[in-house]
Image 1 (cartoon, rainbow, N blue to C red):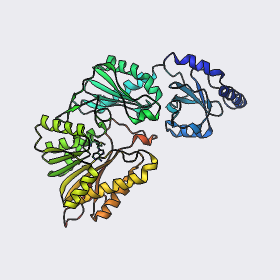
Image 2: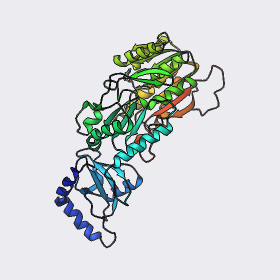
Image 3: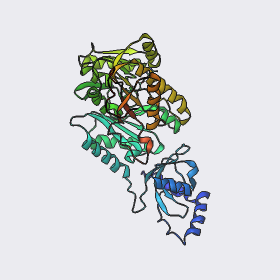
Image 4: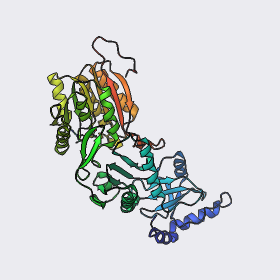
Length: 440
Ligand SMILES: C[S@@+](CC[C@H](N)C(=O)[O-])C[C@H]1O[C@@H](n2cnc3c(N)ncnc32)[C@H](O)[C@@H]1O
């Protein structure tokens, strides 16, 4: 916590809400020991707020706050109606999520450098989990690492961070200096150019925070040479949540004619081509496809990995009409449901895409299909595949259900951290009995 927050906290002490809180606390004093005095601003939660806090979800919405002395971007103390300390949170003024919980501990002091320790712990955990020689992974996965709204992706000797709340935005420069000094990075870039910033009223920008960050960072991934553009690539430059699935795919998808649909920089296609398939890599983004071509050339795979700029929805429809057939298809669209209100339309779009993909598979072919929409739950996505399989009139079989790479931990009490669904589905060989896995 920066010392500049403390005067703000003291200024807030005479806020009318604060007086109301004192009044309420006096009435409750017979039942609960009062919280110890502290420099942090204080927020009083409603009973519903205390309940939600107890359930372990780190987001507290405006209707759960009874009253409080809120300070934008600051660490605040949380109390229940009886005046008991319940935990700590960081505050974002005007946000749909004004409080993001960082601790439900009520004992002891909250160290001023609490976030530094958590960053170091998150990085240490990744080092234990990573395959030897792996050069890229997500170092910090926001709330799932106890660091609200903060994402840090590491590519070789640079890191790209995204701050999605006022508190994370405030610590970003100090965090960047820490990553360089303590973790030996060459530079740290802020990719603050997504809609996630607009929602929080934060400025959209791409900014060098420490050291230097080149436009092309090499990444040796599973023995293949890739390059990430941290300045202009999608997200932080790449989709690190799929890095393990990209290595797993060649072992579970049949070799032959393959479509990598919504390929971005060709992570799946590259590994499938290296395993011997002939891959068409489909995406609408010209810069992403240029990267696919560069990756193919760098690995001597240009004859087997062919980029095509298309709208995948239309392209798959045209291929079905033409009677095209494939041995394997990867389907990894962008989040089709960004808001709960979009869910029904998104489910229809997922179903249509998956129906087309199933129709394009030859008997014995396999579909690796993904959804990164949080609002589409695992069961919803399975329902989508069930409906698609029924319409395609194929006895499709679910072979495996996976999620994001281990560097994207899934906090059980924070379902939002478990957003990526990856299903491996097989269309059984002609005349053959379905393999012994769960039928969709
Ligand atoms: C989730 S990313 C794919 C990530 C990629 N499979 C990987 O493993 O790195 C979605 C991709 O879909 C592309 N895209 C979005 N809408 C599209 C459309 N209608 N047709 C083709 N590509 C599209 C985006 O450019 C982006 O590269």
